[in-house]
Length: 396
Ligand code: FEO
Image (cartoon, rainbow, N blue to C red; front, side, top):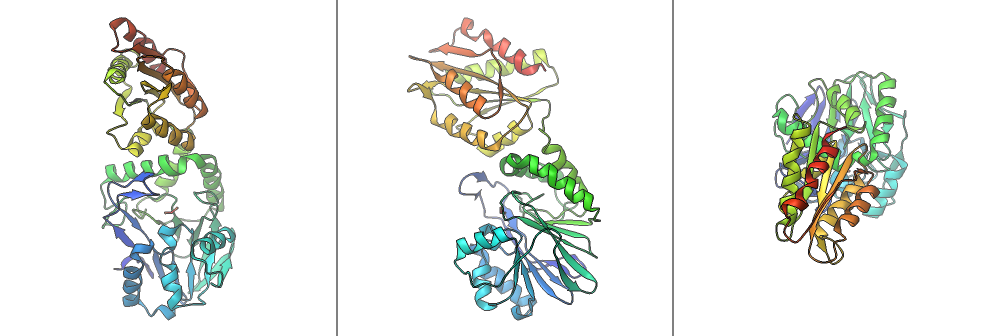
């Protein structure tokens, strides 16, 4: 299925309504996704990226309805990850020898995954160009660590299209394809979720890369991502949003995250939540139980928060494995400039809060002093510090 992007550029990807998980189970995909690939037909014919391996046959069959594969002059692989390169083995079996333009690191990732060192790789770096004919060119821009060392983008002169690959994308299936045609609430939520859960650790590099691209002063009419919508209505709005998100982003929100064995830690969570607006009436307050809430959605709420509280009962001298696993993920995401508090119940030894403090400090949070710690079922007296916790999170 082909969709026109602009002039001689068509979308030839896969809208993947069935997808529900990405990166194993590391990223929940609740609205489906897409693997966007593009076909440029100027004097030269260029395929930009492909699709995930399970869709390879369908992708190539669709492509054959558009062109004779032998007419493809060049393939551009902006990123070696399998969701974009997965159709290459089948494609290269049909058109061996077709040049594949990619970074030196992408040669490593592609050879490592597909074991075809004989493919005709043409390595490129920032500023290198590929002539398309009709007065148009592709200019390559390395996007190292956004989000793999092999990532790059390609800018098409004349039509002013930036093929940005993962950057500015979303796991969001939209037949409408363009940002001005879809539900903006869904779009912005999915764009933020993608940034928070995948790109946030690389925020300093996002800032530098945006400065570098802006300095090139290239007119950008369309940002053609590799997942989700294509930005054609004010495309720079997502670039501006990335600049904000990369700058230790926060909104006026406090998020409380916990798991509970027999409800005691849950009681503390809601006690703390109930005090936040006493000290900061306009602050948004969110409370999530890790055992029944999507972990990536919770991470998105943490991303937009200026403070969080994390609770767990003490279990075998430590914390619940659900909380422990979530904290490991939290540390990976390298959030900056956020406060945290701890709380939890215990029956016997009670080391849970100490463990939570250590783990949150390791994850880069400023852990405040007040905490709530309750033996067995919390008494009114044990719940009293909830107010001090709420004050510490709500203020400043
Ligand atoms: Fe969409 Fe990093 O692959």
